[in-house]
Amino acid sequence: MRQTDNQWSPGQADDKVTLMPSPVVEQLLRELHASLTLRKRPEDVARLIQDLHSARGTDLDTATETALAKAAEHSLRNLWHGYTSMAEEFASPVGAQRQLARAASLFASVPELLGSAGDDPAQIEAVIRRAGEEIGRSYGQNDFGMDRLNRVERTAAGLGTVSKRQYNKRFRLLRRMEAKLARLIHEQHRREVTITGKGALAHALPYELFATDSDTAAFVAYITARSHMRSVFTNGRQRQVYDEVAEALFQRLRKAPERTCWQAVAHVHPTAEVLAHVSDQDLTRLLVRWNRFLRQVADLLEDAWDRHPLERDTMIVRRGDDSSTWNQAAQAWNTARAHWFALLSELGQDEILDRVCPGKVPRLMAADVAYWHRMSGGGLHPDTYVWAELPLPWEVLRAEKECPRSLVEAVCARHRVDPVAGAWTAPRLAAKAVAFRRTPELVHGVAVADPLAASALRSAGVFSGKGKRAAAQEWW
Image 1: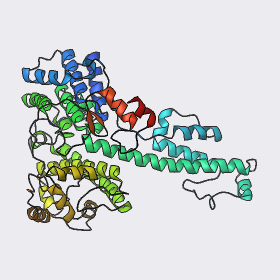
Image 2 (image 1 turned 60 degrees about the vertical axis):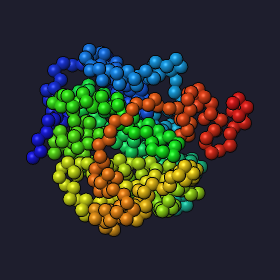
Image 3 (image 1 turned 180 degrees about the vertical axis):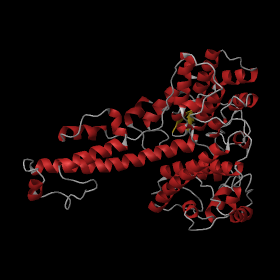
Image 4 (image 1 turned 90 degrees about the vertical axis):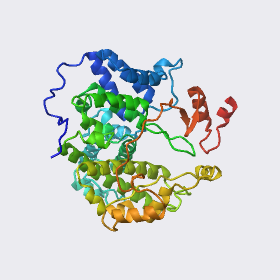
């Protein structure tokens, strides 16, 4: 049995917190926890962390105080305009509020529901089933030619007073509501995949676990904000998540390992150092969760592939490719795979990779970015060649094709890729902290210095690949 410093889990008495937090501290912790599902700028999260430590009267060390001040200097509260042109939330699917309101007006058995019901698939399905009973329709009977009741059947069902026109209106509404429900479930799943691909399991972290320790909450919130940053249009590497501010906050966890809630940290930062503090039971729970998520993402990748197979040798976008779905799923797959590998290694079960070692999945690259790479002396990333020779992820998980660690190592050797350093056959190496850099305003991935200019450029359609709007063009 591995020895761990922190065996705390939800439901246990928390002997680390002896005093209830003040209302101000509670509010700040709630704000930080809410940021786990948002796209707040790291600078603004750093400012909240400053406020949290100030409210608690924490005596910060010089390194942490300096790092936080460097980041918070550029928070919206410290800027004269206090404005960012970028959305601070992940895009959410449109709910079925309009359809539920219409159903309430047409069906006597359907009550007026709260607006939140339109985002709840279970409540929407319950309404469809309840309303269907009024017109003798079963859930799933959507064929307009075969499933509708004729006059005799309507009379037998007690609908003799309902005209054919009114009956058809209700039937069509329920059919559209079922289609809407299917789209909503799909889009909600895609949103979860997107958020998980960016911030791992931060969005699923319960408040009770998150707020166990203020330093833990600060690190998790900041590293998540860094993870949620958008990709920049570049021919080089994307900005690294782990920066000097994250390093300073993590050093505080190292100095008080008995107080830190390592289980919460493991949701977003699965280094060997972190996982060594987590109990086998909690590690196993995380492993099961990531294993299930890998299979869900593999299905999403397969669906995108089946609709339009990709140019696997180059991974350059072609006409007809659903690059948005593929790239969101690819990022989620790689995030889940990295956590899965790290957990297997910490639990001493990495022999599983000798039999099943699914590869990484590259994102699709725009043709103009690929051309930029070539013109600047670069080329395809070596990982692309490895990916092209390995079995597809969903084939590996379904055991349709074998992909043992030995195969991955052989392919990596053929293309001169280090399978360990490249995280093809082992967990990712611990990242070194990079210098903090201010979050840029982006217009379709292109960095713009001023948020007001960014709003104007976005309205004009600049960098979108589409024709600029005439009115906005004149204004600009």
